[in-house]
Image (tube, rainbow, N blue to C red):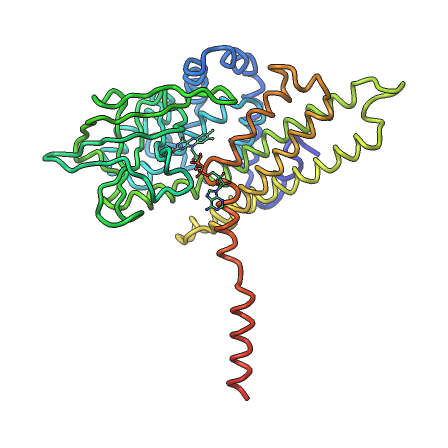
Length: 404
Ligand SMILES: Cc1cc2nc3c(=O)[nH]c(=O)nc-3n(C[C@H](O)[C@H](O)[C@H](O)COP(=O)(O)OP(=O)(O)OC[C@H]3O[C@@H](n4cnc5c(N)ncnc54)[C@H](O)[C@@H]3O)c2cc1C
C-alpha cells in the first residue's frame, strides 16, 4: 500500500490529482526543517513564514485562476490538506485559511475586489482571515450581532468577532455583519475589511495548538460602500457556501493527521523492544493498529466520495451534496481523534512528552471536531436529509387506501 493508503489509485481521482499529491508530498518532505523552525517561533512569525513558503512554492496559485491559469477543484484542495496536515499543522492551517478567505472573493467578489486581493492571497504576500464567529454566535450564525450601520458613502462597523484563525496576521478580513434587511439570516452582509482600517483591533488568543488566532474589536470602524462582498443582505449565503465547500477539506486534514499518527505508531511498535521481542509482536497491539488502518481507510474513502461528488456537481452547474460533505467531515474528524488517541496509547509515556509527534497531533486534532460545523450540528443537518420513515409509511398506507 502507498503513502495514501491506496485511495489515490481509485477512479475517484484523475492523473493530475495523483501528480499533485505526490509532488506536494515530496515538497513537504524537503521542507521538514522549515516546519520545525516555524514551530519554534512565536505563533505570528511562524504562521507568516509558513504562508510565504506555501506561496513561493506555488501551492496557492489556484486562488487566483486569472493569473495562474490553475482552476483547482475540491479533490485537489482535499489532497493538499491531507498532505500538508500529514507534514505540518501550521502549513495545513495557512493553506486552509487562505482558501477559506479567497473562495468567497472568487465566487462573490466583483472584478475590482478580485484584482485587489486574489493575487496577494495566491502568492502568500497577503494573509486572509474569515471572520464570522462571535461569542454568542458560533454554531448559530444567524445570531451574528456585529452591526454595520449605513452612512453616506459606506458603513460603520461596531461589535466583535472571535476565534479568528490568522486573525493576528491577516491583511484582509472577510467579515459577516448585520445590516438589517430582514430578520436573522436575511439581515446579514459580508464585507472585506483591510487590516489597519481605523477602529479595527486584533487581540491574540492562545490555544491548545499554537497558531495565529484572534479576537477582533470593531469600534466605529468605517468602510467604503465597495467593501460589500456580494449583495447586501446576502452575507449568510456567502458564508454558508464557503463553509459547505470547505467541509470535506477539514475531513481531509483529519485523514492527514491520522495517517501521520498511524505511521508513527506503527514505526514505534516495530522498533520498541518488549518482552524479549517487539511491541508489534503483541496481538493486542497488532489488532489495535489493524483497527486504526480500517478506520483511516474508511475516512479517506468518505472524503474522496464527498469531494468527487462536489466536483461532479460543480462541473454540471448543480448544487453539491451538503449531506455527503457533512458526513465526510463528521466521520473523518471523529475517526482521526480516536486514531490519534490510540497512537498515543501505543507510544505509552513517550507519546506524552511535550513536542513529541504524538503529543503534538493529540493537541492539533482536537479543534477539527468543532470548527466549520461541530459534529453534533452536522449530524442534525444530516438527519434532516434522511427519508422520514413514519411519513413515508403513512403515505404508503394512504396510497393503499385510495387504490382500494
Ligand atoms: C481552531 C479553531 C479555529 C476557528 N477558526 C475560525 C475562523 O477562522 N473564523 C470564524 O469565524 N470562526 C472560527 N472558529 C469558530 C468556530 O467556527 C466555532 O467554534 C464553531 O462554529 C462552534 O461555535 P462555538 O464555539 O460558539 O460553540 P457553540 O455554538 O456554543 O456550540 C458548543 C457545542 O454545543 C453543541 N451544539 C451547538 N449547536 C448544536 C445543534 N444545533 N445541535 C446539536 N448540538 C449543538 C455542540 O456540541 C457544540 O460543539 C474556530 C474555532 C476553532 C476551535
